[in-house]
Image (cartoon, rainbow over all chains, first blue to last red; front, side, top):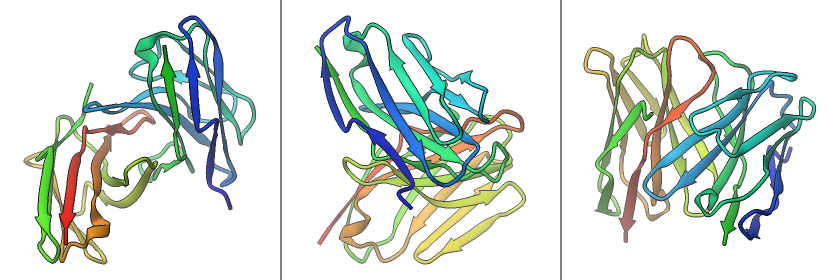
Length: 114
Length: 111
């Protein structure tokens, strides 16, 4: 099993450009998450999907949109990138949205917005 | 908003020494988790302790939870250079689905 995969690994954008970060998991998990990690800030939740067909905002959703394409895939879209969105983005998944959940993380996408 | 806050922010020790990291949180929880992140990598789950547990072991890891003080500690015994990483605590409240992570403790183990 590959676990959680993310594409691309690196991306450089110019301000105003758009892009979609892809995430897929092969663990048959119901819940999926997008985080961003900035130096000294830890991880902050952008959006999550508790189950297929549902999405909810996290702590820092502004400037982002998400799509739960199917049970395996959860994409994050930047419609008009801004330098403040320079960050490392992590996708994660968990079996269910219960107190038992352990999250499994992808390797991350490093995004630089110029 | 941060739920868990780790302390210290950074810790440097020699191989063979023990490393202790602490996490304080604000609201009631039903479990607390610890994760490790090696440089340039995603987070890896280490251990989960439930609110009705006081101590849990996994190999060289020992986690304690004191719900009255709203705090947890992660002890790594006999540290190795390979333990060099950032360690995060994560919690979630009684309701909701999202884990909230602290800012992490960066551990450096030198040989």
